[in-house]
Length: 333
Image 1 (cartoon, rainbow, N blue to C red):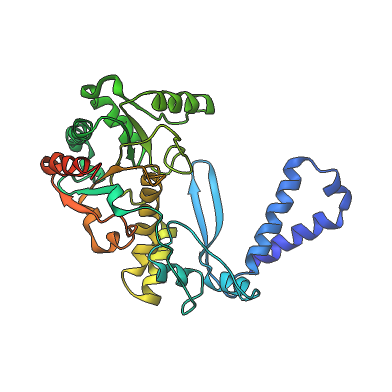
Image 2: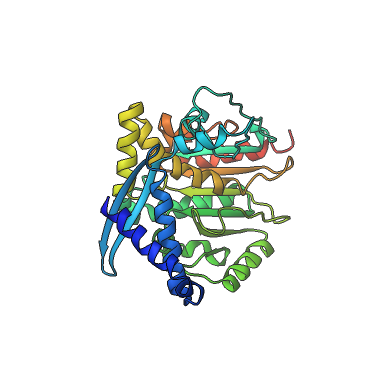
C-alpha cells in the first residue's frame, strides 16, 4: 500500500534526524507520533476488519483508518492470560458481546441486579412518535407527559433528549411548567454546569432537561438529591453514516439480520438510554418511574437490550397517570 510505504518513509526520516525530533516544536512531534499510530494500526489489519474512509468537507479532506470488527484482536490479547474479567452494566444481550470480543463459546454469566423490579416502573408511551420529521408536533404531548409525572408525584425529574436542538424546541414550548423547568445549554462550561446542578439539587420539585450522552446522563450521582423519575424522549438512534452502514453490512453478512442493525445502531442508542435511566435507582431505598417516549421502544429487539429488572409496560399518554398512580400507591406496601 502506497500510504503505508510513504508514512514509513516520513517516520524514518524524522527518526534518523534525531535533532529534528529532540528539538522539534510540539506540532512536529505530534505529527511524528500521529504517523507512528497510523503505522501501528496497519499491523492489526491481518486479523481485523478495517476500512480507510475519506471525508471531504469545508475544512478540507480527512483520512480515517476505522476498525469495525476487532474481535480477533481482543481474543488474541485475552488468550495470553489464564483468565479475564470483562464487565459492564450495558453488555446485553451477552452473546452479542461475546462475539464482539471474539469469545463465542466461552463461559459467560450475568450477575443479579442489587435492585428489585418493584423499585422501578418502566412505562413505554407508545402513541407519541418522536421521529425527526415529527418533533415539532410532539412538543405539546411532551409537556403533557411531564406535567402528568409531576401531578402523580412531585419531585426531581430528568427529561433526556437526543439532541440540543430538540431540547431547545421543548424549552421554548414548556411555559406551562413555569420556573420548575430548566435545561442544559449547548457548550456550557464547567461553571454553568455546576450552577445548574446546584439549582436542581436544591429544588424539591423540578424538571431538568438534559441531552443523552451528555454530562448529566452518565457517571453522575445526585447524592441526597434523589430523583423521582427519568423521562427519555426518543430511542435516539445515531444518524446514518458510511462507517455505521459498513458495520451493519459486515455483521449482517456474517451473522445475518438483525445483528448489523443491533450492533451499529440500536445497541449504542439504548446504551445511552440505560446510562441516563441509571441516575434514578442508586440504592435499595430508591424508587422511581421511567417514561420511554417513542413507539420504537416496543420492538422486541430493543426490549432484549433492556435490563431484566425493568419489566416495561406499554400505555398511551392518556393512560400514563393511572399507571404512575398505581406505582406510587404501592410505595410502602
